[in-house]
Length: 330
Image (cartoon, rainbow, N blue to C red):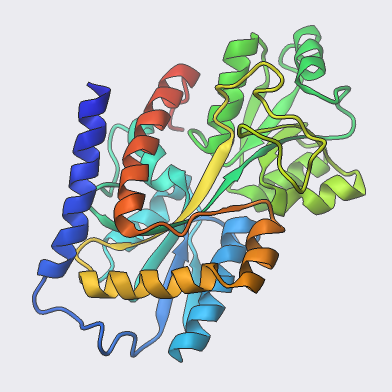
């Protein structure tokens, strides 16, 4: 059944990609873009995904001679932004830079959404993949998962952790850890990394998750410490932080990705033009060094069809994570 659902999602996503060329009348890639563009980000300003959108916006604007506006629309677990983009004209002038929450998690959390994550968007490219760090306030008496679990067991319900909302990657990861370790840590949802990380620094919560890009300065200053990181191997920019797998928890879903989408029905030649330009930007040596490698990201820059296949598999993984974690829409 899981394989059938994954195959069905992949088929529907590909159908949306090919349908994009069947709309008439449609704008032409020959004259695109000839007016300002908008990149919608379902998270507040600040944080890695917002930074990525702004960098791409500047680069695309310079190359195409057009203004590219980054439009932050946080709230409701990325639903507000997704609904806006789903209803935008399918002409390539509205793009969405988002994470797994919008496309491969929300559908498993909510009984009803105001957008269809499969039918309403054309996947352009997966930009990057990143593994998330489990961060702790310095007051937490733990330097690794074993010590954190031991402390949590002696003080059930006394620790809090920040996520970006129910069903977000930090929520799924921590609820999975709680379930597997048999501990009680209280969930406190925030709008995004720009709110969650400062809350941990201020000790409003004691734990949160973040990528290296959003937490490196705080780790170096000692305002936060890292107890674990997702992925199969350690991250080069934080080589002393052990993985969840190393510490006996290989199934914790502590990773995320950034991807670029446009409304369903966008002409295929425009999708290909956007993809080609974004891929060139991502593969520039200076961009890769400063904005990808240095921030602990793994460059992907996939083709649309490859991104479709990835999304189908990611949706299946997240369906299982939501079920096991017991996460519920709030």
